[in-house]
Image (cartoon, rainbow, N blue to C red; front, side):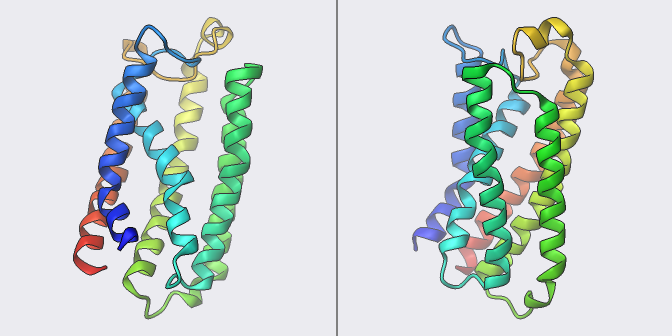
Length: 205
């Protein structure tokens, strides 16, 4: 029952977090990173909540088959190693670079694809929760490619002054308009998945 409630409510959680991030970064007490646009706030909210916490539901769920749990466990380990380190580098050491993110994303993407290919024969006659996990893995592969693209575009657009000022987010400044538009398209795709997942969980679980 708790799994169903969480999956149904997840799009709302992401939206609330996006609202919080945008107000925080654009307010008088902003954290390191600079002002943030609405698409980037949604993307940040999506990645933090959906990559770090949503998979915990899947890895502990008794009905999720072992091959899928292996992939989810890799995903969680990969991001929970990077996440705390990235936070320290951004907010304490001030030496994070999108290049590090691209390197990790490429490793993570390769790991997901290899594990999915190795375990693909175990994805037959799956129950509803397992179908949700398979869809999550597929959308995460897509989103990781998008994350690499965002980081590359950001590196190309960020100036040396912005790098020295520890700017990590695209703002509403016109110079970021292309990145924001690309991000909006991806956000619409991943949020559509969360909404479909929410409806599916409500009807089937």
